[in-house]
Length: 158
Image (tube, rainbow, N blue to C red; front, side, top):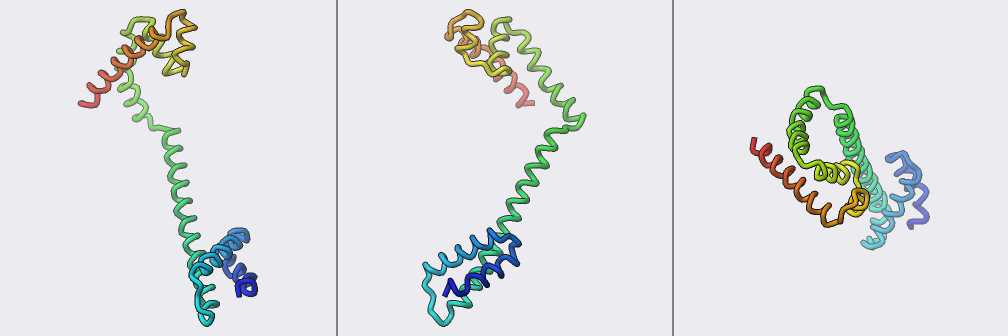
């Protein structure tokens, strides 16, 4: 039955989804779904078309949801890419305090922190570059991170 109805079924689905490859896939999904149900012979053709129609509509709904999510993500990216002057000023003001805290750190601690967090260097690479042990780098990073956490706690309370 499926092989005889397949060309018309694909054509009907294609009218809904407007994509030949997706119509072929949905026709195959219809066959698989009905194969598991094993309908009676007298209602199988009608059930075949109804199932195909429902699967096509489900596919279109899912496609719209994916499209909305993509559009929302793109809008967020654009918002993040072009923050308002007020947002920039607020961020600079907020992070200016942290910069002052980091500037108050000993020079080696500050340099280790910046090499790791800003430039992305590993502790081992920093240790080799500065001629100190990895343990020293770890201790200096703990000191810098403690300052950052304390600053964050103070500003989260405000």
